[in-house]
Length: 180
Length: 238
Image 1 (spheres, chains in turn purple, green):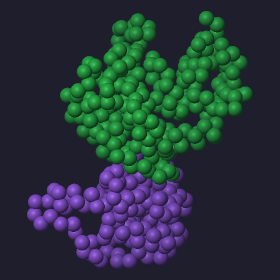
Image 2 (cartoon, each protein chain N blue to C red):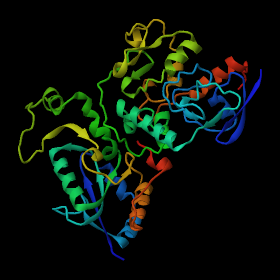
Image 3 (cartoon, rainbow over the protein chains, first blue to last red):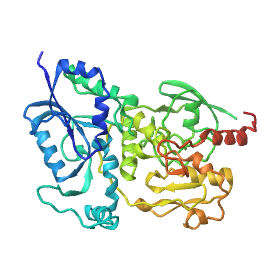
Image 4 (cartoon, rainbow over the protein chains, first blue to last red):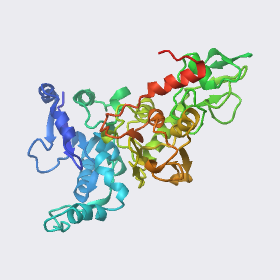
């Protein structure tokens, strides 16, 4: 059987979903039996490869890097799966949206609350610009399946990966789609 | 009182005259999803979760306000109703700022449960991210308007059970909000008796006990049901 080319991506999120992925514990050995993790923050892969079968995307689209990344991911992947509440709803990452644009957020964080050298970071090419509005992944690119939870518990992640193992998209139901 | 016989989902159901379709369905053990309805408070018919299809009616009808009548044929779980209910829950999530993961009511929330029930794994609509206030001026309670779905359960519980009518609704459309007294801070609302029935009635984390943090809110809904039962049936024993 062809091995599954699996990737995980970390956009605007806290990495908690990836920590929950590690909670798969010994089942990670099982995963290694049928999947290759071709790109992930867990490993040192520089460039997102072409021809990925499925990707778990953690985090909302919050800055220009996220935007560029998710477009590349969509182009090079068969199945994009929103992984966790930030990817699915915007969640905590999107809590700045009611403030309007990025500027009041930056001013509050780096000027008003700063005691030392208050200034908004401006390093083009190094610090990615914040988008004015944080968006859930499916409002930027087409998403094939959703894996809610903050974070999704390991057994929910396992159920999704088991589906991929059988060559189908995960279709969670019941309490497995609970947010929070 | 004449008994009315009607059909719900192919099942013959009897209802006392004056009973609603929702009450008749519940007595027969047929589940119809609700959000703004509380047994024992007046029906509001606002959330539209309990819409049903009645044969011979062109429009879907809210079962919490529609009286059961003789010979009625009702369907509560059609494809169209399922899609409408999911859309209603998505509209509620898109309209406010509902962040389950950091909410006091996480795991104790009827909106969150409704999302699970209707199979909402994501919201297809654009989130509005409105700018709304939080009022913590009351000594014991707080209200976070970001989490309010305008079900008016607090308004009805305060008026009909406590008799204080501290809560009411102000504004129109997207600017609608629940207010205390003359739209003044809750802590300055002189009619409030601090009884806490609004906390018990609230389906989400909008009205909460101060000091409760994420997922800690216990609405104490059982107490409200006890009071309603005592009033309606004169049963004061636990």
